[in-house]
Amino acid sequence: MSKTETTTAEQEPGLGAAGAQLSTAPREESLVGGPTLGVIGWIRWFWRQLTSMRVALILLFLLSLGAIPGSLIPQTSADELKVETFKKAHETLTPLYEKLQLFDVYSSVWFSAIYILLFVSLIGCIVPRTWQFVGQLRSRPPGAPKRLTRLPAYTTWRTEAEPEQVREAALAMLKGRRFRAHTAGDAVAAEKGFLREAGNLVFHVALIVILVAFAVGQLYKSEGGKLIVEGDGFSNTLTQYDDFKSGSRFSTDDLAPFGFTLNGFTGTYEKNGPQRGTPRTFEAAVSYAENGGPDQKAVIRVNEPLEIGGSKVYLIAHGYAPVITVRDGRGKVVSSGPVPLLPIDNNITSTGALKVMDGYRDKNGKKEQLGFQAFFVPTFAGAGKGTMFSQFPALDFPVMALTGYHGDLRVNSGLAQNVYQLDTSKMKQFKVQGGTGSANRLLPGETMTLPDGAGSVTFEKEIKEWASFQISQQPGNGLALTGAIAAIAGLAGSLFIQRRRVWVRAVRGEDGVTVVEMAGLGRSESAKLPEELAELAVTLHAQAPTAPEPAEHTAPEPAEEPAEKSEGAEK
Image 1 (cartoon, rainbow, N blue to C red):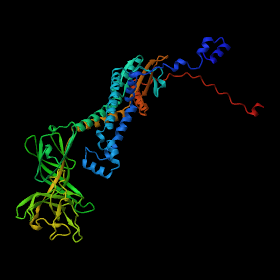
Image 2 (image 1 turned 180 degrees about the vertical axis):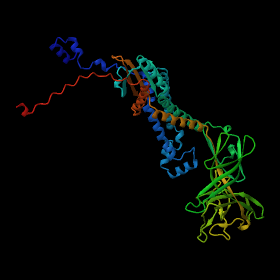
Image 3 (image 1 turned 45 degrees about the vertical axis):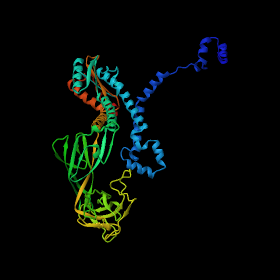
Image 4 (image 1 turned 30 degrees about the horizontal axis):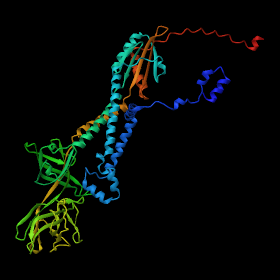
């Protein structure tokens, strides 16, 4: 006992031990040996925190926040070339971005951790709430409170109908309005709006479905691109793709067995007005066959893909492929065919390269390879200005400029090359004969003669068109769409459906007349509850109308006193 406690006990001996117990001084034993959570306690605490709504919202926010760099920074899984270009342009930021895995956001450790924690949090939140909801569905609405007048929506009247008749009518009316109702004592208890909680659960389950669909799509997806010239075809095998990306669980055996041929491409453009040159029609006519079946015809348009064997074929780009023929010094054709050129503006001004491995032999007998830089305009403009450009995307006045090189194309150097670019580091440019500037301009049907007996190049009159397709296989798309629709429906139900309870009490009053009371209570405040209760009261009142008030006995009015005599009469 402390000094203060002893003094108090001595001054007031009546308190004794009780006075000591009332002391506010801390006990020494309370400072040591306090309760500890232990391992199991900490696990339970962590699980409660993880499955709380607050933490789930935080994780959902972090997931959305983490997707921002995946949209702003080039991703390796989407375009490796853009990633390399970004790294060269931002040498200072690149090491930091690589440590934070910002070039591979969706497969990074931190994004996966957020994703998995959110997944576990949603499951831990849904399971107990589901069992609780099932228990609520199996239980009956609670009985009426003792004082219905305290509820936010209330009405009452007196009727001559028997209390049992009123309760039976109320029970039938509420069940007809799809209330879960039953008679409890002298009142009818009813409840409605369970779809609100069901919508809430559907929304959370739909989020899990979307997360699962996202995971399945990332693991088993495949996506590739292919440029096809009119008349050429494509077979859905790995070697046929120009570029190909897939998920970590994807196997080449998962590629659907199909193929298609580009029969023709049709592109039309606005010819007049402020929208001159705007595309009006982009259509690729194809013939396709699935799993060795018969050929079928289809037309692929922008945003209207062809669906084959679980894959979708999208039309994503278009351009021109002039037919170029190269002959050696003896007139032998060493290369002939369409050369796809890539557009660089909206009027389809295009550039590209032609590489001829089997070129010619120079005066010393050395084998020389040939390379040509091509610059093509479908509608020529810029005559007399030292330059050329296209003023319309259609083939109204096609012109092509060729710049020739000879030497080593370095195709056997072991380094990957872009088929649309020419490596001139080991090549020399031909001297231009009859050209303008450093290149020869050719019209369809014209031929450019190479110096030193190297041969000739002919720009054939035929100009083909090419189309670029994206072949995608996303196994989780249908599941994600289903989850998104279910999430919207569940969210709408949880927002607009109100759970409410209604009680109808009918008891006989002291004067023998039945007193009817109706009251309503909502789980959340709503202006519609009084309106709904009023509508129910009107319906029930039609079956149990208000009893007439008893006639009141009034006292007879006093007789009027005779008028006072006038002063003159009194006299």
